[in-house]
Length: 525
Image (tube, rainbow, N blue to C red; front, side, top):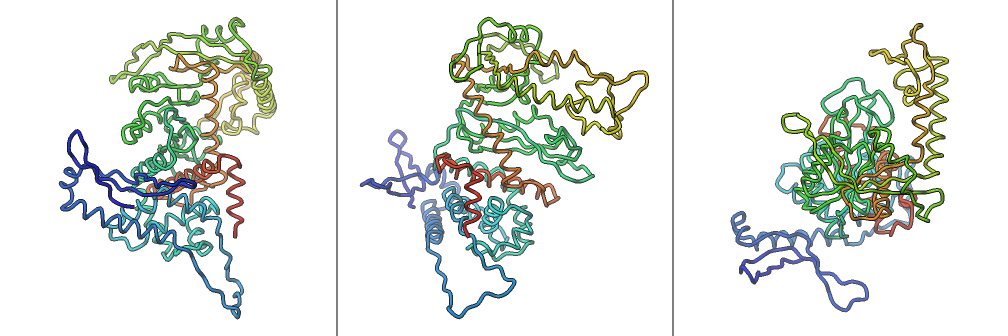
């Protein structure tokens, strides 16, 4: 790496940047890439006495760190040496693949530079590596990570207390770390943010007491425990851009604007079309996106729509077969829809948005909806027969098919009233069945084809898969820390682990399932 000085022809000002030279395989000529854009020399002179000397010294340190990373590891085994009983000497070397991505993203550079002016004696870089490699390959508690640190070919000479101290260090730099990661992914792999996929999930805590972050809310697992909400934004390739944590009682629809507004301001994304499910679509979110010159592709609840829209969906006129799928029909229209936007004073102001409505029917979706409803109805019939077996939490889904059902506000138990007996609401079932297999998408992108809108929306499964990965393969729960700053730092490391895993998948051309790749790395010992 070296310091590049470029004199701008139009202004005569000198622009500094840190550049790395490299040679592609099969190419005769060397190329260069920008590692860090520093700014104009005259501006930097206001911050540093001698910017050129300062950054040349910084580059020397970066080159030394890079040389240390690339240097081979040599070890010697004596012929007479014997393994001690009860000592684990097995090493994992699959993590070196993850280490390669870690250093390509210059996470080590960020942490080393940020820690340089602190009084902390531990290595934040070493601790971050341990937490990330362990989270991806052997997820567990921070204590377990520390106890098992010898399985990696790394110098992890820090205490468990240092790990917890480092969590505080990482949390304080959470937003800067995410921005750094975005910039490196953008420069290393090219990031397409013309489409941004957004979704929300939550993580439960098996505790009784609530606090400011861990609050009771609408749990995705339908559990009564306190939860935290996580909003995640991914790019077109399914690689996470940024995340945000919210108290557990925050509605999904209220998380989009605070997440996107900060990211767009700091990350310089440009125009973005946000793709989300019906839990995100609100008049306020749509108006916010349009006001910021962005766009949207959202699914719309047909059952929750007005009578006119339902009639449009069920009207056979306009549907056509695409030929791509059997038993699949689709239609669309351009339509000015009136939405009610919340003003600063809290009043609802009617606004007109010009949208494209894409509606389709799929036999596969219809069969799935029918099967799911039948399974829920089985529970509903049993609830009517034996209400004492059920509470508000374990009767989730079934209660909507039952007339006269009420629950005790304190215990959640079903309240049985002899005068208002429970029975199955057949009208509700029949009304729901009318819309089996139908799906609606609303979008600001009026010139896009129906097939293109459908293709864009269907990629939302990548972010749903990302949540599944964090909860299963990366075992982001249970969370073995309790203070708010440590909880936030825990999810920061989970986010970084997910990014590295997704980059690995991207680098491998998505030829192999991510769980299979991680298992291979896990077994490389």
